[in-house]
Image (cartoon, rainbow, N blue to C red; front, side):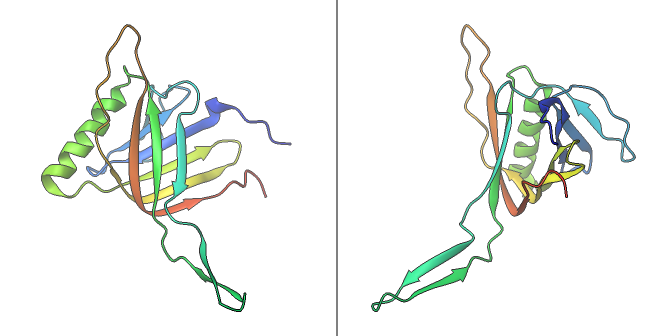
Length: 161
């Protein structure tokens, strides 16, 4: 039996500077073999989504009603990470976007894992910040949604074999 616990979900981002940063709903620090650090800041509610840009296949109807399909070779997609306004990761993602704008070398990797699944559920290779989110200020802090475009996306919904 699988029990979902959002505290077990983590989002790892390999920055273009080759420093590994992690965002976790737990907000604890980890001392992994690559020196990864887990930082606080994921928003309440839905804090991460991933989806492909194109469908797996396209269908074509012939005049006589014959149907054919062609598989899509594209693995492009997007990953949205939603942070609290006070998260230090907002600054990190801003620096990633600004560095990419200045150098064109802003590709990173993103892995979304669920400890109960014991494997990455999402792996995005060749990811970059699509655009810096709009600035919002008011009487309450609003979450900030960062959209990353991904050149090579893999998604699985399997949590166990």
